[in-house]
Length: 531
Image (cartoon, one colour):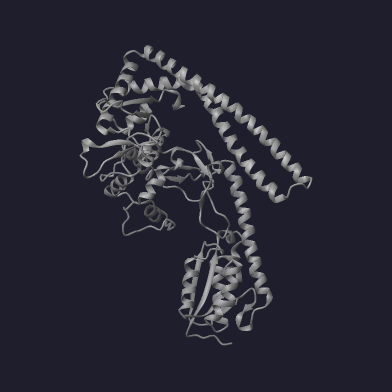
C-alpha cells in the first residue's frame, strides 16, 4: 500500500518518567531517529513530529496527543507511526478504540514499528493482547511507585514533587531551605493576614509592589510551565493561591503527607483525604513563619472569610462566640450602615431563629472598648503586681484544670471500656463467620462499622490523654503571658496581633434588659483552654 504524501505522516513520540528509567532506548531522540529512518526508507513524506515528553501513557490529555487526534479528525493525517503500541498509550480501552475504530473511520494508516503492526496488512489478536499487557504494565508500575511513596511518607520524608513557593532544595542535603528571593514574600503574606488583611487586599499589595506570581517566577527562573504562568500579567495573584499558602503547614516547618489521593492510576483527579489518614511530621525543615504567626492566620479563617470592600477581614473572626449556644458571632456591615453602627450577632439566632437562641447583639465599637479595657486591666495587674497576678491565675487555672482533668479521666475510662467491648464483638463476629453461621458479606459490613467506631474512639482517647498531660503546662502559659504583658505596655487599640497575644476566646452574654449593657467573658492564653 503506497502512502498518501498529500496528507501528514504523524510521527508520534512519548516518554514518561517511568519509561525513562528503562534506559536510552526509549529516549525521545532515539524514537525520533527510528521513526524518521523508517518513514524515509518506506517512502513516507510530509512528516510531522508530535512529541509528549514526560507524560504517562494512561493520560488522555497529553498536549501533542490531543493535537494529533484533532488533526486526524480534521482529515489532515494519512498515517500515524509510533515506535510501539505502548507509545500511543497504555490504557488498553483507549488504544483499542483508536486502532480499531477511530483510525479506520478517518482512513488513517497505523504503524507500530517494533511490534510489526501495520493496519494496511490488518490486525491480529496479538495487537489487542499487547495493548492489555501495556495497560497491565502501567498498573503494575503505578502500584510499585505508590508503595514506595507510601513507605517514604510514613518515614516522614516529603512525598510531594513540587517545591512550594518560598523554598528551594539544598544542593547537598536535598532538604527544603528558604529561597532568599521568595521567602520574604511568603512571610509578608502571613504578616498582612495577621494585620487583618483579606486575600483580596493581599493580592492587591503584591500587585502594587510588582511581586511575580509563583507560576511566572518558576517559569522565569527554571523554565517550569507546570503552574501555567500568565506572562501577560506577571503580578496578578489569584486569591486561591494566597489562601492555599496561608493554610499550608509547610511554611512553619512541618511535612504533611497524604493530604490528597487518587482512586486509580487512570484517574488523575486528587481527592481530599480523611484527617485520620493524613500524616504530619513537625520541624522537618527550616520554617519561614513562626507557629504563632501561622496560628493567627488560621484563626482568621475559622470565622467569616469574606473581606469588606477594602479587602480587610473581621479581626474577631475565630475568637467571638455566643455564651449560650456556642455559635460564632458574625459582623454585620454594609452601605446602609454607618461604621459606628456596625454590630455583631449570634450565628445560631441568624440561621435557626429565636427558638434556638437570642440575638446577642453588640456594637463593634462597644466590643472594642470592652475588650481593650479587660486586656489592659489584666496586663496592668501582671506588670504592677506580678506575684498577685500569678497567684490568682494559678488558682483560677488550677480549679478549671482539675475540673477538666476529672471530666477527661472519666471520659477516658468510658472510651477504654468501649474499645475493649468492640474488640470482643469483632472477635465474636469472626468466630461466627469461621463457623459458617454468617456470610462473608454480612461480616464485612458489620466489622467495618465496628472498626470505624473503634478508630474514632482511639483518636478521641489520644486527644483526652494529651489534654490531661498538658494540664502540667499551666505554669509555663502564665509566665509567657506575663512576659508578653511586659513587652506590650501602653495598649490603645484592639488589633489582630493583640488578640493573638493575649486571647483565645471571647464569649458574649445576652443583655439582661434593653437599657443594660452587654457583658463579655474573655478567656486568656494562660487559662487551660490554651493548652
